[in-house]
Length: 121
Image 1 (tube, rainbow, N blue to C red):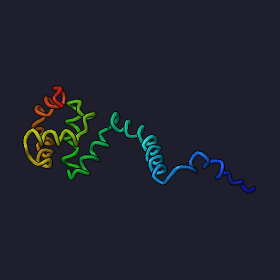
Image 2: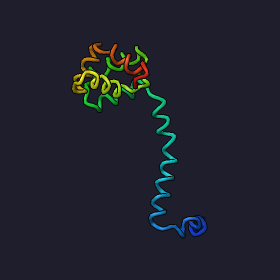
Image 3: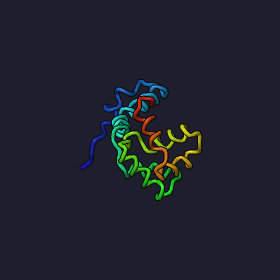
Image 4: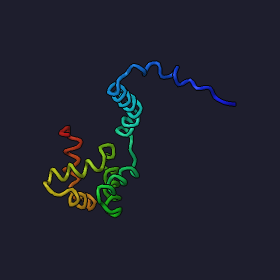
């Protein structure tokens, strides 16, 4: 059974658009498609996702695991562990890798907690 083409019917609403208008429509529709995924990413995370982020930032799994564990302990997982590390690095004015190493050892969490939960975000 051969399917009859309905391309001409389906393209009626697009046929008079310029290349620029088609380009804009494409990106508008793309944004509509991915917006729920982006929103979900901002509101949902897990220890595995946060470990993955830290690994991609250059931390070893031996450093990433305790950072995530402390993040869970202090209820900061939803802030993003990469964000926590970068925040601590800014507070201490040190390289983020050094900041992560300190956090992995349990050092500095009081400063991060104060900054992240104290409304001074």
